[in-house]
Image (cartoon, rainbow, N blue to C red; front, side, top):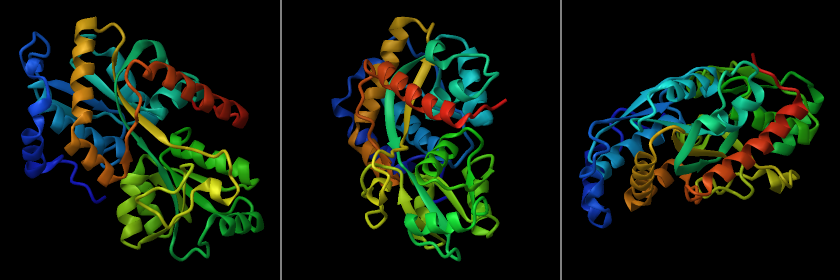
Length: 330
């Protein structure tokens, strides 16, 4: 998908980070916590946005914290399996979660048998980034922009197919939001992650897909698919020639995924504070922000003290969308 998920930032990136750590307090490696490696759970499949950014953050955090940060993918259930694993792990700060709208806003509102509440059982540690989504079509589809898509969909109700990363996920809801705004009916084809949805599109098995910027960019830039819209309020700097949906008549449309790190709510306060300080220092490193920006991951400028309110507001917004659409996932 254009990113080597196993090498993280690579040797050169790590060397640059190490050289730029002069302003980072050295206390992280000298305290009683952490004294061993941390586990960063990614509740989504490898090669997706959550996975690639987790590996960048983990590589850099090792140099700040003084301990390794091991990335572990626990995918399934739209992020619910990995989230529950983070909640059930010992509340000592050694297990953290890369969470987003699916884990904290969508799942607790859409899934009827979740069995936990991330809003009370997990607390934010640090902001990581905002990720725009891109709507793109197979090159053979006679659609070059959203107005043409709407016209085609209205002439063939329920026939134009699109792939998402699963029922009730952020990509699914973003397309449902578009359908509601445009007054069209599309054929939703859910997949178990980004990679199979993209493969189906490239094989001509579906007409279009919605994907996150980091994993969509290589295919768009390589010319194997055609981007027709981004889900931000204005055009994205990585795709300046692609319209934002508000430009084409969707004035209040926005479907951007936030990503943040979380720990169990019962984690000792000193450990939470050290985690927060360390990961906020990691995210502030110029090499980290540059690497994420290059992938199409934008900053999430929300301090951790304000993250609970930010996440609660996001959950309320998507909860309203879910209730209007009548979405229930078993």
